[in-house]
Amino acid sequence: MSLNTAPNLAHPDDFYEALIDMHRGLDDAASQDVNARLILLLCNHIGDHEVLIEAMQRARAGLAPACAALAEAA
Image (tube, rainbow, N blue to C red):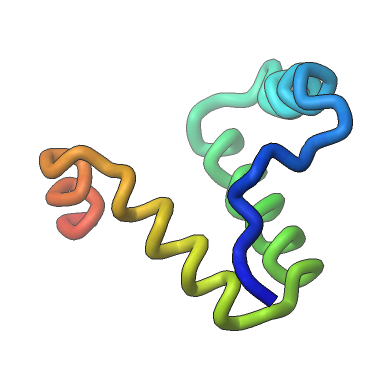
């Protein structure tokens, strides 16, 4: 299996609205926690190690150099 980067959401606007609603009323710490939980749930659903590694690499590669340095320091 390879990472699918083509648009693949049946209802992208509805998904985005649900994602924003998931964060509504949460402070920054709770918002980060719910993001982490969602990521882990989706990673478990995908299950393919190589796909997950590729997704992490692509996500990290999209960071600006200053953001990447901040992420490394954390």
